[in-house]
Length: 123
Image (cartoon, rainbow, N blue to C red):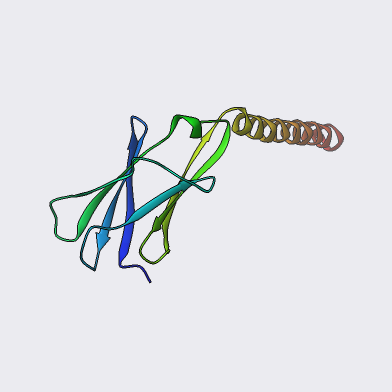
């Protein structure tokens, strides 16, 4: 069981950030992977609070692509997964949402026709 707890804070300028709270001692050993490959230049630095560390993960440019990209954050010491974050971009998402909206519109049109027919038949 990991001595670390991860709380995501923000992503800005291509850098994902989180706070690590540690019940043990020493600098936390963290690995971040994307598609099974280690993300380079991950930084763990002291936050100024006892037992708290800042985690910064730069998003590699090759990981910015259409679809869903998942980054897994692991405690290297014991292999426990502390968390993950995802990037969703491109037409894959757009097509899904547009398809759902089209289905909803078709169902709404069908309900309007059925309601109008009902009003004519009962009126």
